[in-house]
Image (cartoon, rainbow, N blue to C red):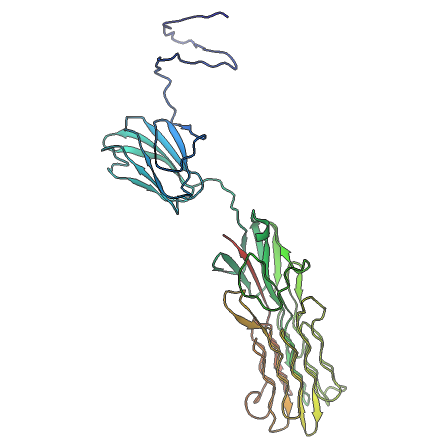
Length: 444
């Protein structure tokens, strides 16, 4: 091996001096010093030593500070002009456990002889010592670390927060747009409630209608979103679960049926809840009588030959609703059946009263306990007879000539509950309650 030793290289104007070749290293001997190479405003990052407790920084070094276990200090070296130190929030925990930067002796930071507090998530700072007046000056302060959010991120509807969960409520058509999925697969299975529109009620001159059925009610509670679900929780049945991906999910919120019409379906992803079934129309107008319709929950039957409408149509598991009640013809008094609800069937009519609407059902998915999807009460004919009571959950009261409930015109289903309208008197049109879609998931 050949060796060339050079003590001094005379400067040569206009020429280039090259030391070393491709793939080689130019090293200074032990005890030697260098001038003129200098720093270019960068530091040597200490990737092999993540800091988790108080430490003293050295000139020319950058550090990754992990405050997950608690706050601590970074002590700066004695200031000298041109000294440089950098630090980065390693685990994005400065917001909860700050890093305190402590100057040496009487040195200053930004012109003040006091500690600096780094308390912004993802913060990175580079400090250069300028002079005794300003001391360490910040030349770079960034919070733009590129970090994948490990949680599900979505937009759409009216968004609220309950604990570690976000709740998206759709009272009308919209889009649930997922822009990021969770790195924990189980958190991508969302909780949801989908309620269709309730049936309306309406009657021609000389006719009456049975109570409107509630819109279909479907719910799934993911284990990662704690709340008290309804008894109709469909988890863990795989056909009922919705595991989201990065895409947009159109949301359909069914309108309540207008007049004597069924409610409209509500849809989220693969889940469809069927609109409520309308109540029966009695003779003499129209003639023959028109039977009640099936739906999420069925409409109430009328007196004479008209049966009640079936619920859970089309069928789902768990059931999305129940049938309406039947009517009763015992002259001179007549009572029609109440519309079915999510929790139970509509009540049958009697000689003294229209049938009550089938009860709705309660869930805490929205952050508090609310009853929805109640059936409408059935109408009653002849004085001294009450109409059926609309069920808790948005059902309307049925028409009845005497005493509350049910005095005078029937009432409509309540908006965004899927409640069925109360059975109507002649020349009366009432709408069912519109539906509702709620999606809940863990966001942190």
